[in-house]
Length: 256
Image (cartoon, rainbow, N blue to C red; front, side, top):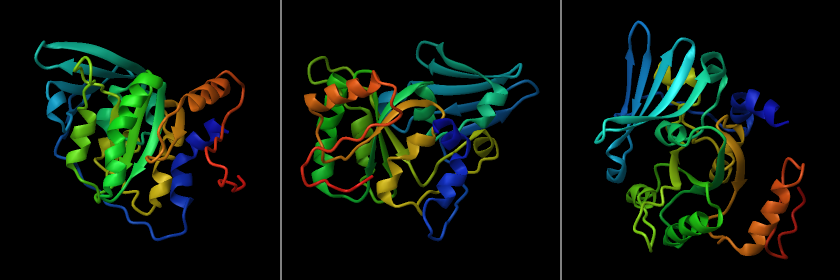
């Protein structure tokens, strides 16, 4: 089922809601593409000052795609992933490419939708990020958002520090639903996709079609993480079940 969803993800996205669809194609300022005889080089930089010394470099060489994390201060490079070009061309991406590629393959994602400027949700995000750092180590908090949010929140969360060590938590990625490069051809041809036709509650399900995500959980921003949840998730992960639904309130009686 998962392989079918990923193979046909674009068709599913386009057919998920019967509404008018608007596509906008444009190139972000921090996305640069260079062509040489041997290599296609994609250089990606973070929008946040706390990561200004990092850059993601995607290279094509001998039918392989190499994704590298460069430290501009130390002039060194770390290979994040090496993927067969034909396999890479079939992959689907559902987050900003810098964040997408920095995390590499087999990502474990807790996914949220954020829209509007309701302080109730903004106040909770920092605590949730810290809870994930403690209770879901090696998982990433993905926040899918549109143009309606407070932009200052993006780097505030992506640059959030541990209260005790003062080190970057580096466990939160913001994904702009108005500017998604869904696959290899879209960023080579500089065509981005605007998913604004989707209802905001559906954004957080986008990792379901992401080729670099191994496990994902769709969550609400008004829900803190508790030990009972962790225990239930671990039971599921140790089972052979493809999916798991949890309800934390006795009035949630809708049938799935």
